[in-house]
Image (tube, rainbow, N blue to C red):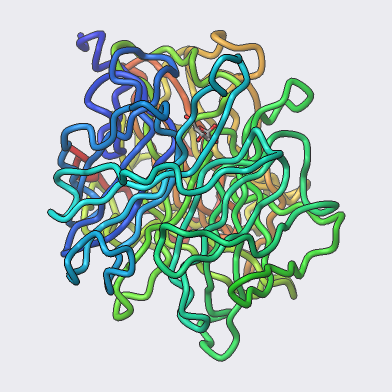
Length: 490
Ligand code: FRU
């Protein structure tokens, strides 16, 4: 099979920039029927460089339409990460009383006459549903005397206190500010000293309420904090979360200071945040992350473009094992994108093998439900050729879900890329269900009904398209096996 070198590894149903470099998702907001996705973008290179906001929109979270670059660097510097909101009541005064979109982002430059970095928060606004953007002439609107790392504002309207809240990363804490109009900001509090993981700079926070177990009377706030790469940790950059209470100015965490909770146990889900302004009648908290890792993001073996986003996911809080836990499931729109390739219930390993032998697929969704009575380890192998395979499985003895990408294809572009990544998980009613999303350069596995998630990049040969199954006992029982092709992101 010949593949255009530039398209090699280009995902089928994951969002990627048309060309050049992408990192964090930015400014995710829903307005007038469109999901906006902005992203950190270097339009002249395939490695990180002067940051712009690239832009795309979708009506269904599956098909994306590329839009022109929304924000270019200016006299205040590069455009780093940030958020966007619908200013429904025109509190900013930018829109003549109508609703409009306001982006709140970090301007990154240097203190004049020095080489010292400076990060300040600024605004841009759009009165035509995100098509064109104007920078606010009063920029920047927020700076800090002490913090050099002072960035990635996420803004939301706090209904009970009738004001805007901004949370942003400040060194290794999160600072919280309030505003009546998005232009004037007042310091409220700082969170994070002595709690959580401090092995890297804190970045890209998010803060939102979710009902616990679907009970609106029991609401908790979730804080996401991405932690930058550090040479001391093989994991590289990753995202932690806290649950707690928030009164409009202060976040109080439920966790003890020793407890570390990670959003994803793979290596490649970073800087993710949630969409703003999802209509109340929908009510979901929708999220996606940048599918890479600062450890090797600039080195991945793609040509002419670099990086993809995860699939969109819905976040919920559910009590699991006595603890309020952040659960992730693929957004239901991913189900609309399906075309059935294979589907059977109550089958055996042998019959299932017959079904998948001969299939050649490089991008698909695979749901498989194993009975633990069959013995372990069990799981699937994807993107298989004579020399390559990515193993996704469950180790019954260790009680853990894993992805092993040691032999997944190109792995030698960085010393820690090859490896096995795992997370503890208990079977439920003697079963373990794997829901696996495979694409040309990634695997995402959701297990334990969204409790255990591993997202990993892989770079197999385009021709490595085999599917395999394995289980401890030859006569293993499978409760479900479904394979779906998915429609493209375009
Ligand atoms: C996270 C990050 C942000 C910053 C942006 C720069 O990946 O480092 O903190 O705003 O990337 O591109």
